[in-house]
Length: 477
Length: 157
Image (cartoon, rainbow over all chains, first blue to last red; front, side, top):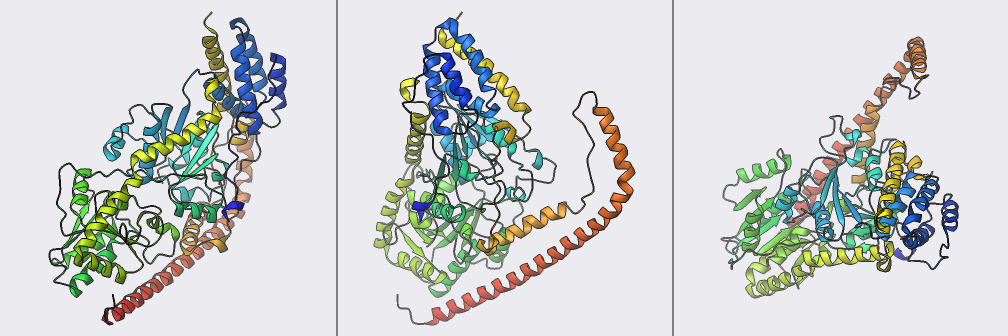
């Protein structure tokens, strides 16, 4: 199936061995001939490379007049293609570092997707002029606190979206966009055209990219193709898991181009911490209950009822972030209030240090996201907290679906289950069989190393090196 | 005069500034890019959607319809022409005032119809949601019941 799907956009072709411009008239004639098809990437590519060579060969006194004639010619192209060419010429001529814009409309809140974007920025900030773009104010200090990333060599820019600034929208809701005739994300499209490379980390397929090179980072295709759909116009479509890739093909009918798992770096705290009789869950308390902490309480209660002796001393810890007023969290709190003897602890919005301690102490890690769900969006697209737990030697028991299948190898680095009965049986098995648990914990820790930040940074740098070798071949810079 | 690189840098910066100003003036993406194929609009095939996607689709479209119930002309009348602008604006305002009673008569009926239609869809949507929630509760009970029966069977693990 994937063989027949088109890539999102034809990537820039490698350098061509076209005709060299012998004089300015030839160069301008070529520029004029391109005005009918400035979107022809192959020709634009060739023109940019040859123009840079020609300009570099000019003596000082001829540069000014040549550039003035070139400007006249470029003005016939339309402003954005002309601007794109100028940006590229600057890089080809080695006049500045290439610029990268990374857009995420939610940089002001903590989250796995945002961490992905910030880590891309962190990987590139020494070689590129990186700017983080959002629609609401955000601070690099927060990113440092949340993800431990020093982004001090990146710039920031807030591009407001007038559609969402009339007081009706506490957050930027993409669902409101595709039912409107006007596209609220046009200001971001316009902004994208001011950079060499534009990375859309926002999962907003309504942003039409205008940069010379564009990347769409897809954490999951939440919407189908409908109004204002531009994901197929990006040069590169990066996906976070094979599960996401499969749904990109099914929903958007395009072939993703690059697979980069998210960066996970939950190193154990310094010093040895003894494992305790703790079953841990780390997941946001979603208002819709998609992470299923309620079912965890149910499973734990049943386990204690059916195997009281073996469960003696064990507790369930539910950690996760939550918004201020959360009906789902209130429901869990109420359930626990009527069962004060049930050893279940709620840890809401805890610090990174406390979370690290919890991971270090926990023996078993539960992740129920996707259990009894029909909607593929409700299944974990990857599962960063599972990897965090594994890096700390917790044995993962996860729902058998989504990106979780790519992380946990059953019987080797944890187990996968399909219903509540199975997770109870597997938990009991781990509690009973200490040797099996120790072996699984060691292998889980080992497997967790496949998803580290170092690996992510290396993959991002490789991708951008490939992009730059086509955009500005080293020999010319 | 500087080095060739410095001259190139300065010349490119000057052209970029000129083109940047042109970019600012472009009102639409089509004008900006000189391309007419940037609509990016696709028709949704509702038969392909999952129940959750249909739910989202219904909610979003209902909300958009709700905002467009009143289709009477709104907003100030303006003109970007420097000299003729005030005259055009005055003429348009006069025309709007003269025709408003007749147009509003028709559009007011349309507004009432739109309102009824949105309310009808909202009621249907809520009814569907309630039925869906009851069905989900039944499924949950059935699942719990099945697991309970299963637990009472001899343990073969």
